[in-house]
Length: 169
Picture: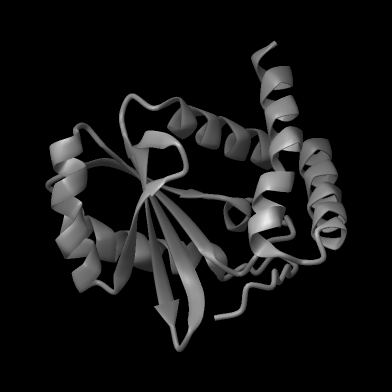
């Protein structure tokens, strides 16, 4: 799989793709999950994005998080374990023919990252100037890191942190 970043204009089929995946996940994980949300740039109409659907799922306990691993794997999601330094966040990827098509971010509530993720998404959806600024920042960062996926994810952090701080003020 390529480690190069690929940004594309918003695709109106992304919400439908999310709904299809969400339905599969609800059926397989429904007894453990408390919420499922379309997050990331594909969840914001008009925003430049990687063509990968980001899905956030909330559970109430570590036991519930652990119980989700096998059913998610049965749907084709590869469990990657804890995500970063946050012990309340788990990460899965869904690939098709060697291309990532979805990412599943599972949060054990309460989790600050869950709240921040939804706050940022909702602000991007309701504040056109913030969305435009973020789209420009995404392009600038991608070019600055020479389209490297891992570096791109880290380099967007200061913009997101600053936006969240302004939203909280």
